[in-house]
View 1 (spheres, rainbow over the protein chains, first blue to last red):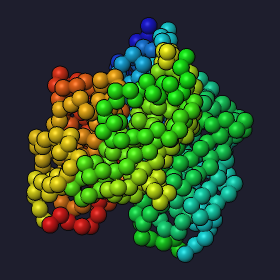
View 2: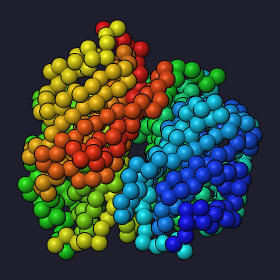
View 3: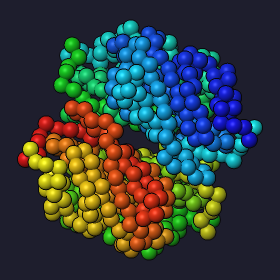
View 4: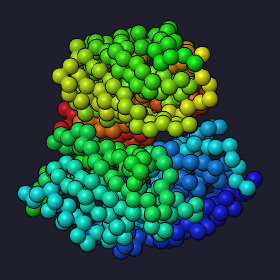
Length: 136
Length: 136
Length: 136
Length: 136
């Protein structure tokens, strides 16, 4: 079985959209990850605020990395997000996962996204299905 | 008060991320919209499948357009999405909104996303807060 | 394998809480059910309105019946509900399920709850995990 | 404006369903509460496990108490719950709220429900609309 960071490196290899977003991995361990990205002009809507899909994409990547880093291939079943503060151009966002529950078949994660002022900009909850397939 | 299509045109004017996604407006009316986009290589993850954030972004735009087209400025409070089928490069997705409930303060919308084979690839639910500010 | 109605009858046999709620089965078929219940004084909060848990309980039972009636034992993974209209004493509620998606491992259902005036009082979404165990 | 405990006492006065559930208030303060209840035979389904609606009802009451204890009347907009462990007859459950975000118009709360072994049996997220009406 691969180690958490090896799994995540395999996942983001050739991941074109994560590259476009500029997602950086700050930390990865079993069932956990911390990611960072910076908001560029291209990620904004007509009001110069980050599109809601940008925070979701960051959180969705964090969910995939954290849940797969347990060693078995995991697939998102259901996700939800609340956007709690406006995100502006040049903001730097950090997403940190928290494993709420893990059993044989499913895992539940909450993810907080903070900006550079440590203000919460989004709260995400994700549920994954855990397959029998190990990362090798 | 502006008409539904006028509101949406105002919203997507200068919307850099929607342009990057290549979102096209197929139909807009009071409390409703239908959007289309095509999956490009840049929207995929390391497995040549569309990143989960891509479908979310399409649905989130549809939520914003449908809810604001009622005439008052609306803001997303809570959204959830289930990804029900893999989305591949070159797939063409259509998102269609359905207004589940609307009152003075909040609106609830469900959104189905289908691919070119009419297969459901995602189901989205979104709740918005409706402000007093009219679109003018 | 048991038939849909046989499965549901097996499920509600000895179901003390459903009996307390007075849930009646109006219709059951593969992947679908329609339930009815009446709001009593005991189901209300301090404002003489039905407690939010009452509508949830009705919808959660409907989710269990609809998803298990496909023939394999199914278990709720994640559920959400929006309460869209006040529910009063003596209201008669009908919950009807809609199967949004079904694959080998998971199923997604939406459920509308209407009152006797055909007004929508709640919208529920539920995701279930489908086991390999058949109902026999 | 009333104090947190005064507000909650006003809310549960005459609350027939909370009485039926046997909900006890362990602690209340601004934006927070901790509730306890014991699972009786009448709260179970046909498998001698607590019906999903029981945990939801406990969490929904906790959401109402925590959000209203800030001083203004608050109304549930959207709630979700994941049931993570079976709940048996005679289990004693404790629900504790956590205020994720609060602004002028909306509040978001997560609620963990633990059993007497400190095992997490459910995770709940709720969003409320905050009115202008003070509790007096």
